[in-house]
Amino acid sequence: MPRKIRNTLALALLGLLLERPMHPYEMASTLRERYKDSTFKINPGSLYDTVESLAKHRWIEPVETVREGNRPERTVYAHTELGRQEFIAWLDELVREPVAEYPKFVAAVSYLGALGPERAADALEERARHLAERIDGADTALADTVGKGAPRLFMIEVEFVRHAWRAELDWASRTAAEIRSGSLPWPEHF
Image (cartoon, rainbow, N blue to C red; front, side):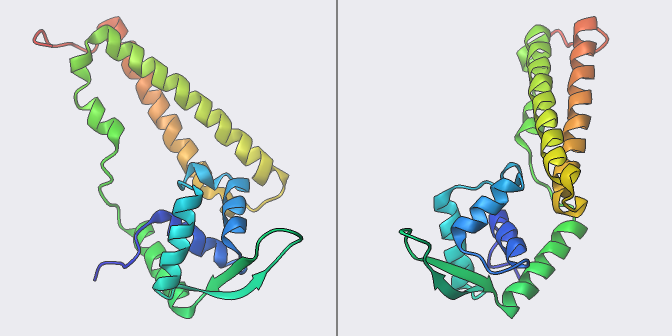
């Protein structure tokens, strides 16, 4: 049976609620503090829609309303037993079973020849520069968290993404160099 909720932001919120009950603003702040906004797309509209959907499906429930100073009241949410079970089952499924994700970059690479050798090499070199910047950012995030005592497990996805970016950076740089040297043959019909 298909999962009722498939939004990966929901996965992130359910993960946070394993720690303690939180209100949506705290959830968003915590995700950003932990650099999870590089893994999950976080914006206020989608965050509140996701919280609403999780509550509608009884995966989370309001447990209290709090007010700090002059700020508006905030509803604090916690896991339900159903939500905890769904989270664990969903997480287990995502870790175990590779799925086709159809990345845009792979789709573009499949038609790299249409750019011509010069433009293709330029594009790959620019991508490599952007990837190097992202890797530096991930290194900083890891130093600011794990390097300061946070458990490595809390940032394991940043470590994974950093390794994936390094592999992509190596490939893009090597392929651009092959194009520039002429060792990657370019068909005449392009």
